Length: 457
Image (cartoon, rainbow, N blue to C red; front, top):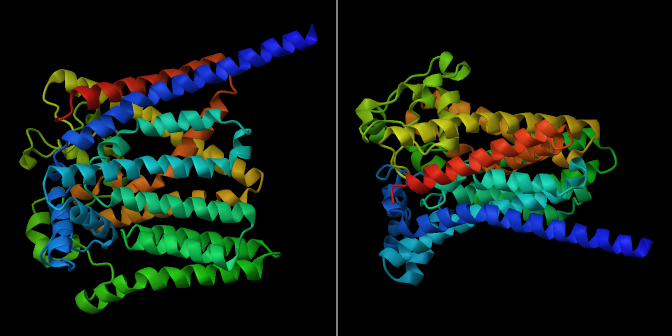
């Protein structure tokens, strides 16, 4: 009799797991459809500086040389993404629709690989989540319906490759710390990843700094592996410099600045001087403009002279661009219903963002409580990234730099923050669990409505 009851319980448990897996997969189908559909229909020139990114690729393919940052707006960008893209041009043998679709599919696929990095990282930290996979499922669904990751997917840009390489570096650093694997071979592998990241976008410098800080903390707090970690660090950064150093030396010698940008060049002053706001006040960093809930778009009727003043504010603009594609490149909102849906999504987005941040703070507290050193790089990366983001916006105060896509490399910390918030809430009372599911369901529904019905294509 007992064996029969045990058999029934096992069958029920297995059926429940199958049912939950089915629900999880079905939940992801709409967002996958939106991504791959846009890879087919999205105009390749409608990405952020899409024409300039595409011209960089074409120059590499046709001229077999790097474009001058003095002549092309995106010409200052490190070349790795554009090199891979020019290979696609080579194999498709033209610059027509097949090549364009392939480039967009490459972006979509790279974006989806971020989820693999997050899942692998979670695996090394599952003890912090009660050894349960359920929080990861919530985190994956949340990020799959995070609009900034959705609307950037079909665009030709180096952001996704940069975010992917940074996420791989973050995962590999976590793995090395968790396994106490400070071999010279692992240091060389991490150095290769960091080097490739630095050859994709300057954002790789933030990840390199994150690794350096994490290793310094370990050296100062760990007696047993101090010399081994030091050797690991030396090999890691030697390989990093060997792979990517030439690019920054070239910039310093040729242009007088290893981190040359178009915003710092007089050749492009005529573009940036026309961009409001053109200055930064203290209030832009410490206040929040609630008017964004009524109109989250950057400008009306694609006319930059009708600039939305809420985008003077860093907090407001960054939050808005997590949830709303505000340049009318992906979205095309022109009626009251569309603005109402966008406002509702932004409201739910504010709740979800605060929920994720709270979860990340709880994650830090838990990691500190159990002395989980493997989470150290995950904890260090966000403050470094936010500091760099704020500094860049002070240095170059234009609306084009207030974009959440510049923080997309925080994919793993964001998903882990949401995972831990979910883990904490589902252990509470029924009301908390119901609210958790209600907010997530509202996010899914509103993203499907806005990015499905109000897509430009």
